[in-house]
Amino acid sequence: MKIGNYYLAKIPKIKITIPILVAASIFAITTVSISPINASAEYGQFEIPEISGTIAITEETNDYSDFNTIGLSVAMAVAENSVENGKAMWGKLDVVQGFLVYKIGVLANDDLYHKAVVDAGSGEALYVSDGVSKDNWKHSKHSDKESHKKWKDHYADLTPQEREIKKQQWGEVKDAFFALSLDERAKMIMHFMSMKVQLESSSDEEKEAKKREMKSMMEELLPLSVEEKTEKLRKYVNSL
Image (cartoon, rainbow, N blue to C red; front, side):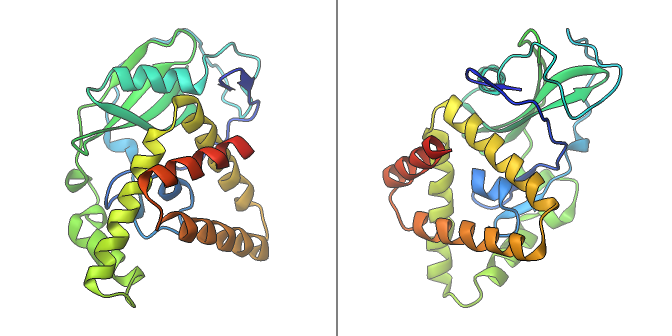
């Protein structure tokens, strides 16, 4: 896989998550055990019509480095241009109907979620779903009522006013993430996806240590202004 001018050989198959409250945050996507606004969303509800790509895959593997693919940031740009006022929030290389594609999640500024399928060879948008609101996820656990309960349980020791401040802060994390360039967002997405895969084979002690590290990072990030959050995220990306 290519990000900017760099290739990543291993393409992990992992379940992507999206936040249900406030909207999308890269940390809510990837650090699933830390943020109270994450929830696993089954993307199978999107029925992708028949597509025809340029890179046929006869046998699925975790290594597509031999294929000449466009970069993740390029695929994210294609997806964003396919959705009015859309911002790409996640992406991964995958095989759909026997063709190598990028699956890209796009959030519009009306908080409607779109799924785009971009040809990994040509960069053509093969499919873009209609917008889906969080209230229309097929699983009732993604409803506003259930999300509010999870949020309240997570911050049970806070007053209602303090919880509202937390929700606002998480929304600002989303704004800060989307303020990054496509290359920066793509690099961060791949970093956290790789981290999640590595954690799956880590010991319980290593997992807990990483959770504490990420929780500490988020506690430092949340109180900052949107501009300060953006700069902190950018420094983090540049350190990778």
